[in-house]
Length: 493
Image 1: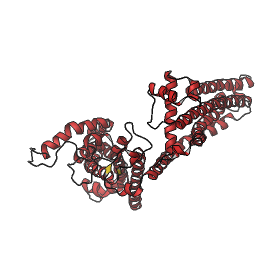
Image 2: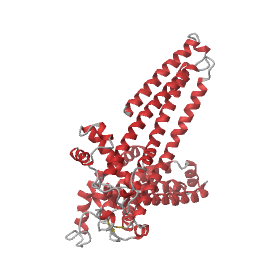
Image 3: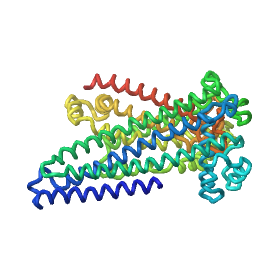
Image 4: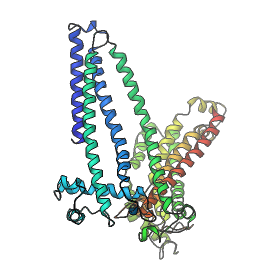
């Protein structure tokens, strides 16, 4: 049974349980809701929760645990001869999973029967030919053990889905019976439902933490897999980025320093544009602008935040780049030959800075407005002018929040991709010249995972190592900002 149908059935049973619970509560009280401990809706909600929570809880846990169990079972049947030099069982299993997906697609397309897809005795040549005819050949190293492992993977996945369906439906039926039987006039349904809702709210609040943990673990595991195939010293201290998909990474140079430098350089240029303009805009809107001007100017400024980054990238490629070439290029207005093409650090940095202006401006404006008016009045009472009050009272009091706004803009700049691809080019180099093309970590993550690459190679796994490097870099920025915030808060609390 498809998962969507299982979800619909559970929801239908829960709706039925709500109606039955509410109806039973009223009937047990002789139709007078005043004889019930709780409102009738609480009795229905109690039955609904006892159906939904166990059923969906089992479903979610099953979907999370089943892949690990199947991977362990299937990996045990793969012979050691399939684990080539420079590879690992994890990388072989990734090929097995992709082959299993290809087999399922071939069955869906009618290229083979479902019996043949799970038959471990199927002829290898005929089987691979059917996959090829269906356009489902996913690797050039497809071997008979990989085919057999993929068939077993699909077989166990189908069996697990069947068992999960049965267990979830039994849990839903059991929850319906449980909630229905305990529906009595004296039952404290409101207390139970409110406690259940509280538990659900706590679980919802925990999703962010669990998501972060999941992201970090996925990065860590794949990064470790990468460093088993490629030397960590060469990665962190290499000054050349030249991936090659020949020989499973044997001829590749995967030094991250040029990418980190490009990321930081472009981000610095962007922040040099965004911070002054955004901060000055926030000061004007919060301290000088009339309510009418503010009502028009602030929404107009925040429109920049809603423009897709691909539009910014096209603006950099078609407008800003040629404009800079006409000024700083050969035959330009200044008569210099500094910028040879439209794609350069300066191009991407300027456009990215424009994109970051509303991040700095809007957040800083809200933070400055949050400074108590009593502090301004006290400054005016001591004879300070408006500009002196802003410089010596308002901005120092709002500094922790402004630092947070700048940090958000910096994190946004570090993670930007499309503007860099279209505005800065794809050259990985170490240079101080802002008129040269460079690239960033995020742009290379996209390029490494684009196309028909061999996922078992370092050139594909390096994307996770790059992502982990970016994560550590952003975490470091957060720690620095937290230190600054705490230092200045001690002075103004």
